[in-house]
Structures are given as C-alpha cells and as structure tokens.
Length: 341
Image 1 (cartoon, helix red, strand yellow):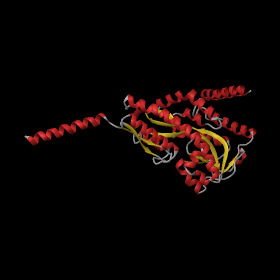
Image 2 (tube, rainbow, N blue to C red):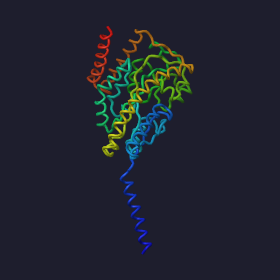
Image 3 (cartoon, helix red, strand yellow):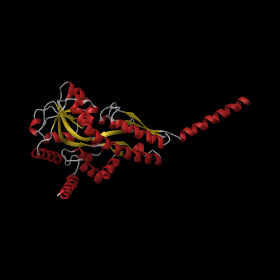
Image 4 (cartoon, rainbow, N blue to C red):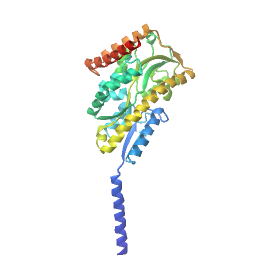
C-alpha cells in the first residue's frame, strides 16, 4: 500500500510539472539570413532575441541560421511556406516575392539622400506593411541595408564604361534586370551565394552592393575599384509568417512587434554609420575609390533610372503608385531648395 501511495504521488508530481511546462510553452522562431555571424546585422538580431526572451520569460525566442545556410531568399520563402522556418531577414529581392510594390524602394537613382529614403518609409510604410500582411507575412521592422555602389575590376565612371563589363545580376530580380537594360549592360544572372566563387573564377568582374555587405561577404577582396555614386538604396526587412504570428498570445505579439521596430530602427542607423566607415576600410585595403562624376553625368544616370522605373510599371507597381512616390520626393527637394535660398 505504501509503495502504491508513493507511485501515485510521483505520478501527481509529474503531471503537475507537466501541466506547468505546457502553460509555459515556448514559441521558437527559426530565422534565416544571409548576414554572416559576427556582422552588425547579426549582433543586433541577437540583442533583439535576448530582449524578447527576457520580456517573455523565455516563452519566445529566435533560433538563427546565418550566413545563407538555408539557401538564397527564394529557398528561404519555400521553407517558410512548408513550416521549416518561421521568419527571415530579406532584401528587396525576397520582399518582392511577397509584395511587388515594395520594390520601388530598390529602384535605381530614385534617392539622393537618406532623408529622402526616410520620407518614403514614413509616407508609405503602413501601405507596405498591410500588403505584407495580406500576403501572409508580418513586418517586424525595416532593416535597410543602405546605399548600393558598383564594385568592379575595371574603372567605371561614365555610362559608356559599363560596356562589356561582366556584371553580376541577382538571378530573377526584375529591378536589376530593368536597371541594367536601361544602362545597356548584359549582366550575368547568379544567386547571391554564387557571387564570391564567380569573382574568384572571373566569371564576373563587377558587383553591386552596400560597402558594409562587400566587407562582410569579403567581395571587396576580389575587386579593384568602387564607383562612389549610389546606384540605389537597398531595402531590407525582417518578416515572420502570419500563420505563426497569429498563433502567438497577444502579449507575445506585442513584445515581438515593439522590439522589432526598436531594434531594426537601431540597426538602420548602425548600418548607415558602418557603410560610411566601410568605405574607408575598403580604400585602406587597396580598392581605388572613383569619385562621383559631374552633375551632367549624374543626370544621365538618373535618366536611366527613370527609364528603368517606367519599364517596371504593370510588372511591380502601378503608374499611379510610382507617380505618388516620385511626387513626394520632388516636393521634398523643392521645399529644401526653397529653404536654402
């Protein structure tokens, strides 16, 4: 009888603690990114994770798969759809697979300053957020990658210098395709995970990327020149599956959204600072920085950018939406010019 009583007690204790563990169920976000471990991007993401774990008493957290270990962004999207992953950090290429209109943020020669970039996020951010949501994803925060520059093994300054350049193009990217068509460049389509090997084997001799990414991915070690005229601003965001997000209790949803906005805002500012610092590091390593050309040459590049944006009407966004974005930027420039007079 005594042994029976002990057994019942043990079963009761086990069931009690089992119920406690169920109540404290943990929700794990398996999260992929091409950013390598040790990069500023991953450092901020790990800070974000620590804060979420602390505020949720360990009920919610991330498991990271950095360095492109889960494949390129289209591979990652497939894994999210099948439930193997719950979220990821995306550049415009991945975001465009979810919401095509968001690719306006990556369009060539649209922005001249980060003030203009911030303006468009402020004016159209909620519209983009809703589009993500309607297509099955929740935006936790914008993680802008920064202004994109051309890195090459041949000097590039004028549009004519691009002729014959074996330029990498992110495979399947309609924005890059329209951009290089307008610039009379025949690019070499490759996934981002193939770029380093292709630079080493000289399959390509030019790439486009923010300086911080060129440093983190070590692409700068395989080029000789950087053209100091921003080609575009590279958008970025962290997204989680709406299906996963909707299963979270409301308090955990709030923790995730609030901290996502906070830490991604911090990351954007860090990225901008590190991009500027990365140019100096790249120059010190022996890459020659080609100064931006005359205003007349810049206007030629901007005309190409305008042509590329119009070629994407009906493919990524409407003509009306493009006009709204461009009008906001022109209005800002006019106001700024008037204030400086």
